[in-house]
Length: 274
Image 1 (cartoon, rainbow, N blue to C red):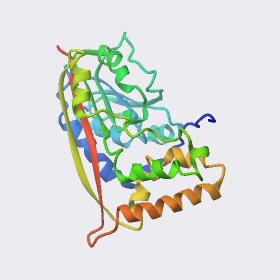
Image 2 (tube, one colour):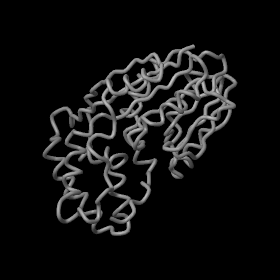
Image 3 (cartoon, one colour):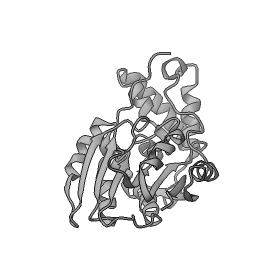
Image 4 (cartoon, one colour):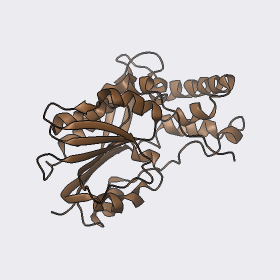
């Protein structure tokens, strides 16, 4: 199997459904307790195009917030949001590989926050010990991840990638069917580190508009590894997308009010004892 290329992201495509994508971020943020310091240090892991990080600045206007991502395209877009914030805090962005990143021991963090990023980090649960150790007493690790990898939008993609026409070219490109844990799994992992844990799941029923809206959604997220792998062969890329489009049309038919797209997400808020 050839080396899998690093996924290339398209900030414009990703933000086409920003209203739906930001809803779990807002609901997670509402469950995070106030940091133990008045001017907290916050890390936003997998910050993406930067706009979502501004929601953290609105919640904690005096905070020094650092958004971290490994996508050059996302960071280029995010830096337009960098600078001082209204409450005397700051917002900056930097490159980081979350599989290896750890907080600076000399500057422990009040909040480590992540919105829909850990599903891209194999073994992310193994990173929790370092991340919790990098929090101040009373600090919080809070995150949400998609939990819909058994849904047709992912299952059909994996099935197509494994078909004879594509399996040699796409072997190892897509994630497994279980890249994240259940709420119970995250609870046990974080409670085992001594944290006070609040873990839950929610299934959103997104109502999408337009032609092939589920395909348009996944072009900004789950389909990116395939689009990256086939980028050098536009004919093959377009052929895969056409086959996948037809499969999605059968799984997510439009209705009189739009196309219904159920989307399960898993949340956890873990507080280091103070």
